[in-house]
Image (cartoon, rainbow, N blue to C red):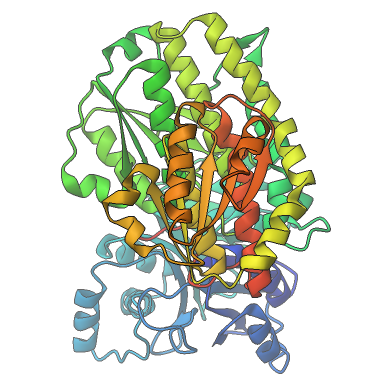
Length: 608
């Protein structure tokens, strides 16, 4: 959520900043701006709207400074407009700040600063930081920033420049991601790797409450006490091309086509001499036998992966599993102890609600196993065990391939726990593992036949409201299918358990209502056919998704049937979600929506 880029070196700063911000557009934003130090004068250019609007304004400014900071804002405090856009400048013009996160005590600080004569122009929480840095500034920018971060409460990634310092700037972070890119004769800061990958592969990952000073030739990092910190260089091992469209019209389509590869990348390295070996997972048989309960905590799409994880782990491991929305988890005083394990799922590894849930679980003694996609992310670093999903960069805001790999990782976790607990045999585990290895080929076949889904979307994209119904694992699948549709097409959609129809929901079904029915569970197939008949009797149009073996039977009842290759019901959700992703994609395309950057949404949610 929001994007930060900073540069100091020998190049003109503005092209680097704009290029970096363009690589962060996927994070979601509604305004953009840059600030450059031009011979001791801090120039700020910012505006509401897309980067193209900012670039248009910059054409007449001709900023030539070699040090600056840039920002794309996703509005939290104050509406999206030019004034609320970042960067924010202090009253005297001495200090300029960009900020990701939320300052929770900004109103108290604002009232104090007003008493000191400071006048506020924006509605943002960030403006208090610019004025507060100026209030403390006495010629030492680092000291001023240190004092500020001692006072502010909440989350932040900060970039701070000062008119007196053309040769350095300062950054800091807490609970909001920030990296430092290490170049030769130049250095960078950014919210995420794609912003600077064109310039360097060597980065520092800042930890909470660390502050860094950047010059073009050096980077110094300090902890909250002001003591120097020796940072380990993290080398990025994926290519710039991985974050580009590669000929596809949208990142979302490209990322769906990458699903077969990333599932293989998630599975294959974990199979050694025919054995499942989960790297960075050290839980023992004794640890597992002590577990009385497992919590799965996540947000949005990752939460839906967790709902499927609950079914799978309970079936294979016979351990009770509770799935929680991360934003609610720590506020309900959860009953967690050292006899519990919390599985944390997050694509970015920086989701703030989820990170706080992790810390709450850890404080109460639970073992933490995280499933994340970003090496070195905050969640990964705070966990006891980590299972990386190896999905590569996912740029489209609506998650596709990351979700498939999260599911794949959850199946492998269930197999690992079940084997060590003795609730499944080696033969049973091998059967499931072999079926997992066939999923990439199944998804390739689904993608080859995507025109069937495209045709259906063309016929029904004007639907005002769409219902998803399913039973068992298909109910969990319906939750994700409904979310994907809402995210990118803006069509109202709800997901319900099939058996709940007669308990109220069926009152909403009328002639022409579109109902989508994933039907991959053999034992529940007949019951779902009955549910289809119930909605058909009230005028619904039904799209069903099922294995090829059920297609002929289902065509007698449903209006349209989309098939997936035959696959065991237990494994089906990994491949069956791809048609639902394609359905959402084509519905959005038909409506003319911005598929990769849906309104009001951000890729990585780093505020509560």
